Amino acid sequence: MRDAARDFPQDARPLHELYIVLKEQARHEPALEALEAAAIRDPADMAIQLKLAIEYGIMMETEKAEQAYLRVLEHRPNEQLAYLGLAIHYEHHNRGEDLAPLAARAEANGIDAGTRAFLAALDHRRADRFQEALGCLELVPADIEPERTAHLRATVLDRLGRTDEAFYWIEETGRRHAAHESAPLLRAEALRTQVRSEIGRMTPAWVNGWTRDPVFAGQDPVFLLGFPRSGTTLLDTILMGHPETVVLEEKPALNVVEDAIGGMDALAAMDEAAIDAARAHYFSEVARYTALPSGRMLVDKSPLYLYKVPLIRRLFPKARIILALRHPCDVLLSCLMSNFRLNRAMSNFLRLEDAADFYDASFAHWERAQLLFDVPVRTIVYERLVQDVEAEVRPLFDWLDLSWTAAALDHQRTARERGLITTASYSQVTEPIYQRAAGRWHRYRDHLAPIFPKIAPWVTKFGYKL
Image (cartoon, rainbow, N blue to C red; front, side, top):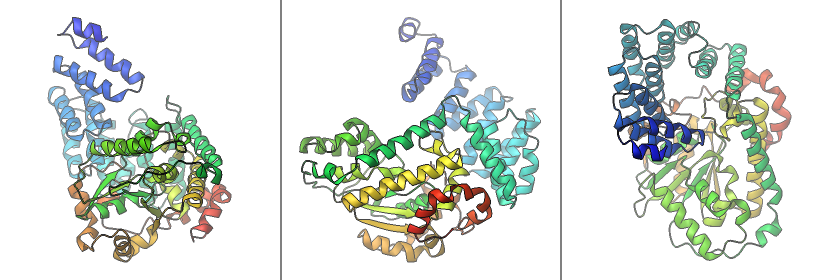
């Protein structure tokens, strides 16, 4: 395909075929480059533009995605997929005010009633018109955004207090995602197996065999972690509002370094040169996503660094860790109710039993690492955070040696200014702090009961009750 693209420089088709081949190999960045090149060769091909919009969305190139969708609608005003893609784009970027005009444009251009019902459901849900949203979802055909429609139905029913129906659609969303050709349930199981196998290898003898740590002259990062849906996005938004910090939100810098050095098994034998090189690699990866001015504290936030403590300890022996905690039942219910991208970690939230097993494995890994390394940790409890933000955050700032800045508590301002929020909390973090999600699990107690034996020890350990 590359040869054909070179030999026929005016033809977009070889580049489009190259894009397809690269996508099949999950080589997303070069696939996007091939598709961009195809679009340059044939800017009038709206099928290419539509695929480009979708790919830009996947790669978080948000402005480019929106412009591509709008180009498609300019040339093909009755393109159903462009309306759906743009609606999801607006919804995910907290631009609810743009949904109604988009729905009106769809109606004016003769878009089918089912697609318009989906757009209206999004608009009603964002405006807290839950009964109206549910009525619109009844009109959406089964072939229009089936996973997202099921998820919308679950969230709307939850807000209407129709708990049993909501849980049915929570599980139905998981079933629909589980049927994806990428075999998400198998990938999720492989990750849980990996995490548990690492626990078995984390022994005092293993740590005693580590080579000496070289001195790190720079400022150690702070790592913010905790199981997903434990309040980490609210907390990182507050930290983002402090003038002395730079927050790296769920970027793969640490994971890239781990892959480069050969995983956890390589940690013990790393010599000083290897550790120095890994640190340099980490900061070069950080620089791909954000500038880090001298004197600013880097806060690297990724919830599932819960099972990356040995790597953190190897690279940055003095690094401090912020652990976000929330009632395990609320955490797991919220994970089930979130429409995550299906990577191997988030695929654990398609079934209740997998989610509980992943929680157990992740915290077992964390506990073993804490016994071995005694890393300095500050715990932030979600239920206390949403009840009195300042009382929970002020001691954290003291612990981090950050000056007190009351303006950092205005998380809504920070959320608006930061632009795209790439986590599952994208809508909640722009709202005033609310307590409706604290204790929500009680409504779902009967549905969650099968996992109580697995999570009961953690509930007790963290000071909660079943």
